[in-house]
Length: 266
Image 1 (tube, rainbow, N blue to C red):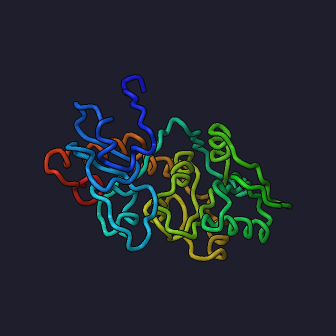
Image 2 (cartoon, rainbow, N blue to C red):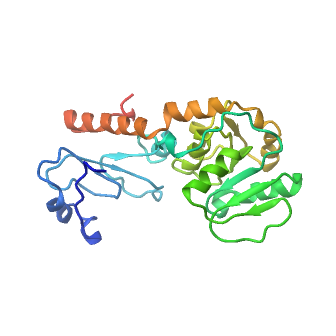
Image 3 (cartoon, rainbow, N blue to C red):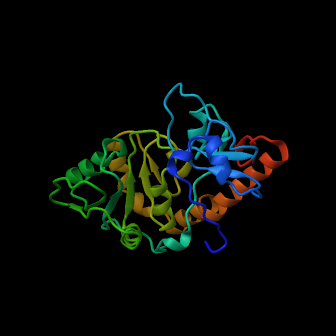
């Protein structure tokens, strides 16, 4: 960013507000961190975004902003700003999906991500599945493993898929891959875990609690309108919407000394 001033801070200085404060420019209006702080860095107003799930019973951090309504609720808060992405980074295919197109799983091949549901569905139905992510398992038949992919390849895979499988088995704070799919015009199959019910509506995908239900939902997933998928993401989950949300948070903190309740004070 041409307008940005980069200040190098040794990692060991970040966790302690007292050692971080000297690195903050004197004319800074507010400090926004993406790592935990127990108190303000010096006399500067500050907010902090929590990107992970904290352990049950862990002490709360002041002025915390969470990534979704569910993420906030599980940490006894009401304050959140949705993540956002730049639509220009994704290929939008406005054409209706076809039943014959491949399904896609994109992410870490960890049981919490639920990739085994997508694999089981492909084995049971014979429908083509592309798996993109780290760790090479042994897949055969209709399942193709392509490993980790760069941004260009990921955008192409998302745009050409019948749907994205995101059968999360954990309470994910947000779920960026869901938004990546919607920006591509591609519907999403998800679960009722974490933030997914806030991201996926019946118009852009389906929420299921079992692999059998997800297999059944996949049969008609191609009927979702790609324009509706893109429109939902553009309305709620772009980088500009996210920036506006944080700007409202900043303004409220500067005016009142505290964060507003709800989604960016709305």
